[in-house]
Image (tube, rainbow, N blue to C red; front, top):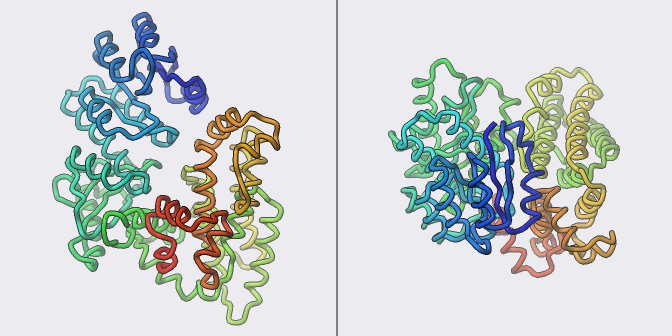
Length: 507
């Protein structure tokens, strides 16, 4: 087992890091913790560590000084920096010291896991040269920046500073995100995409927080996106003839601030691989066009389904599926093909919503078997039974993730009454728990602070409501709990990448 040392001046962060992962499943062992750099250094003189995870800002000795001194003890020490704020100068100093990644608090568990997996791989291959190690270090930092960019988590100024430092050219008129999956040899595919991106100019390679390889491409014209993606697919086929590869592509978008939208579209397109297993290229625009005629005849209210799933109301969710599909089956002009499309779409939406709530992909929720069973169902009851199986699994997945009954009740309250006044102060009085402890418990259970979770949930609910042409943007803002329009616009653009008005126009 490789040995890990944790340093942070906030005890609940240390406790949270200990509990956040099953360290032994990664063949890692936590051999020590400390609340400042001096104590950490003293302990590390006696206990060897392979990996140091440390805060930057600490009393007695800060994180950067700790790294310098700890490297005198163990020159091969691998380091992950934690920080409660963005600081470009710290990042530059950390890079000079050879850090693995710079993680912002609250820590994204997917990013932490990906970072640790990369470190473990390096430790497993100690014989490689320093040049290759440096290349991988830069790759981890690049993935971090690209994911924050596509997730709308980084401002333009900081983005360009870090992009310039890493040699990433973002000043392009158009952008398009392409994701790739392989039936075997995923790592070979990732390395091939990286090679094609760097040597043949396809764009910026990255691995997203779910471990999926991709490229941010920069077509010269709007209409060039399709041909460039097909050219990329052809090059991958030539290089990996024995690997079954599937690409999914978002739309070509204007400007770097829209790249996140293309990424979300690419993820949605990839999720349709179970509907179209025969396709090697899944283009979001083409899929949307194919579904357009059917969508006009389908009136499933996804907002209600999302609410029932988030609230873990299994019986009501299952009843709603039965009611809706009976209604659809009786609608004038309805065909079996359209009912099949509705069932497939609903299963996909449940999968995507579950992934959004848990901040992780759910690959086992909807597979080709479920899609095949839907398409081959000879009766309405048989088809809806498959959809209900998926819905039941989604609810059970959420239920099993909630460890604290209090947090479970609070999550249900948020989901049922997101338009109401929600604060840690009022909830702490309701449940007779100190607000500071409740905030720490909430973050430990969900991976997000209370305010972050509430804002993200409200924005997701707003996105669903914006699809209703009868509602005005200011009405939707109030329906999800925003009474100040400026703040609503700011939060929506932060999470989605575009304003609510622009998003509504895209639907």
